[in-house]
Image: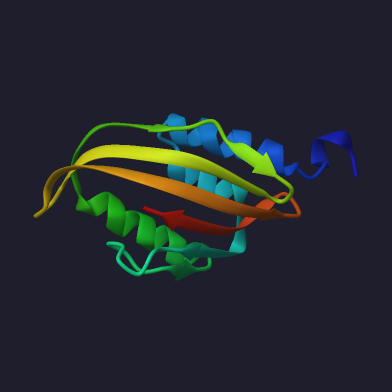
Length: 124
């Protein structure tokens, strides 16, 4: 294994995810950093169901993007890393179709194995 093929650490994955998300490259982040068997866990009261696998995750992401009428702003906090886990706080100020303008605040928790995100869970 060459240096360029070295598995990313949890900190590397965390920093890269936040960097891509801050640049609006969420689908790039999912393709680059997520395991094919990703488990995306939403709260029971969330707008979307949980998803298992990249295909279902991409469909969930597309469904959420389609719900957004207008994005007014948002942010991703610097990640906090502990072992194979990291967290980032996300804020999205958007107008949601049929619901009006709202500010969504989430705590996003990720688990990393072998340099890929295997679980993401959202709390809001």
